[in-house]
Length: 277
Ligand code: NAP
Image (cartoon, rainbow, N blue to C red; front, top):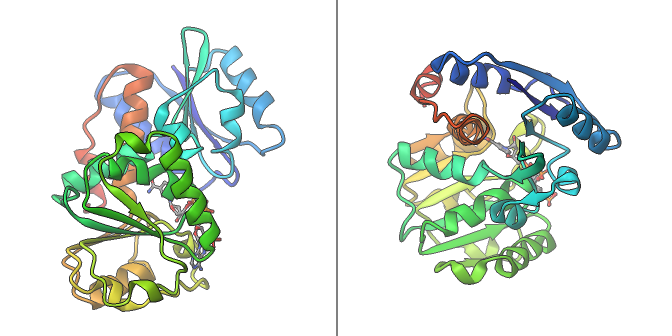
């Protein structure tokens, strides 16, 4: 079985280790490679990968949007996210899906973090935020609030989600005017999620007021890191009891992709425990 992950850069990707762990659980023979693929060559590259016997691809930055152009069929959640993190050759056609949101929701459930009837703050309105917001809304939270440094992107994100299936969602979604979070002062949240890319570099600052953590039961940084990110440190300083990075989401989104490619549902507990998730 020929699978792989494409992106640029790609060296950091943990996908080969994760999918090899899954394949070993079912004694499946797997070739899972990392491929450095640029935006310019992406469409031709993907086409030839599937023509030469490839079954599925994980897709990471900066290719999550461009791969939609080559897909014959796109899932509703990938349409809502306007991005795909996996491709799958099914009945001779390329199918694009976004498993990030399901990955996050599964991870939160595993960690006993409640979503239903809860007030959730999402920081960021990039690709990751687009992927997770529809899945969170499907879990019937009380409210999802999207805050972004560039407010126009939050407005666009909300409009896009409402256009593509928002009517099926019972919960409401709001965006404040800026990431200074002035409009959120004295507002408390049950769950705070960092979907910005601020944690990817030590010299980047996430300008948020620590009051956003007051009263929160949990905080999760989508970035996966061996050490606490600044966001995680801030949450712990504000006595948030449950504070996590994005490792669990990464493993769970991969498990969903693997299930679709192979028909086998892997056990994620070993990988989650290996990181103390
Ligand atoms: P992206 O599309 O480039 O979006 C980046 C977002 O972060 C934008 O909203 C941007 O705001 C905001 N931002 C960047 N630097 C900031 C700063 N210093 N202060 C405030 N806001 C800042 O990136 P992405 O694909 O959404 O990825 C976001 C994060 O999610 C990354 O850490 C990535 O590693 C993580 N992720 C994790 C998983 C997983 O499975 N665990 C999956 C996908 C992504 P502007 O619009 O104002 O520029």
